[in-house]
Image (cartoon, rainbow, N blue to C red; front, side, top):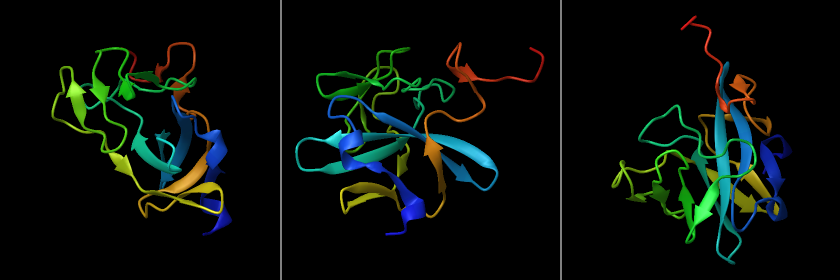
Length: 140
């Protein structure tokens, strides 16, 4: 594993929430959430948005909510299985979160998705932290 692709130590990924990071696809930033799967030391990663409304972030910077072991969209009440990202309840039932490939090795979580380069922990730079939404320059 290349250290440039190391996102975080495995211990930094919570058992009952998410760890937010930013990746790049060329010049564009994308937010990704990491979540731990049970006690087996595996981690899954998802792009940080609800498939019902893609401008709604699951993790607004302090970890996504979890209800009965599933990730929760606080806006719509949709729930997602952390293992496969499938929506089990809510307006997007049957849809799934967009997966990002990661690997756990040597006590760390590494980005292994060829579409992206790891940028850093925390939210993307174009997120307005006061509202938790993307900054809009359209004047609307």
